[in-house]
Image (spheres, rainbow, N blue to C red):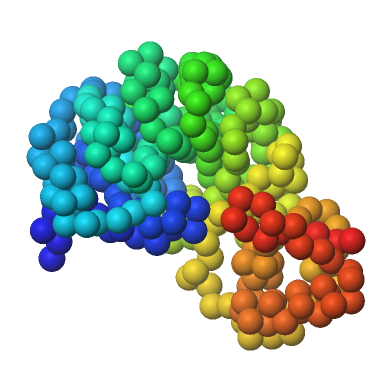
Length: 308
Ligand code: SF4
């Protein structure tokens, strides 16, 4: 059992490297109760910002972890609720910046960024990831079941302001569910809002682990890739379909090539899109490269493949 109450990990993360999690609110204390929440139903639905867990104890745990030589690429405020509900999350970010070389991240649903003091504190992070998966108030309420008073329009406006004042990396996650928000026209409207904000990256995700609500039906990996093209620049598909057994079959070379003509993808994205084991995909990629049908482009630590 971990000796820490508020720290978890570090866990390996494809985008954040080794990420040490810091959980600042009790289990399922959140401003939303999303259909797709993998942690379960929200038990404390609130907009009240408080010192949910003692700031000094969190800092003491971090000090201890640093003293013991703990290393991570990111110290990440995340967990089983909304981290910006903690009134001192900015102090914790400041402590990490002053005492460690690791970068800091906040994984937030973005509802509280409409408060100037939350935006100001969030500016201390190296990276902030927020959500935007709806196009109007009705779709927002259906998907996220927010606390009374949370307005999508106000949230989008706050993202625009935050983008302006934040020097770090801003990522937006768009969470899509079949039959809820994954039609072309719906995603195009979300993409228009995202465009106004201008994040550094857009991630498309879907319900890959069993969510609490039966309405939360996953969008297929191939459909996610299609929808990613509605964003400019195209969004990245981050859903990790680990639960699905990757098949050990011959990859469909022509279809892969057709996909790479539309947009660049990594080998991992191809493997997820077709549900085919990585070694088989790697073999096909190698042949396509030898035949000069595709080329590799490194970007942000990933290798993207595109048709020549
Ligand atoms: S914001 Fe996150 S923690 Fe809160 S209900 Fe939605 S998915 Fe769950």
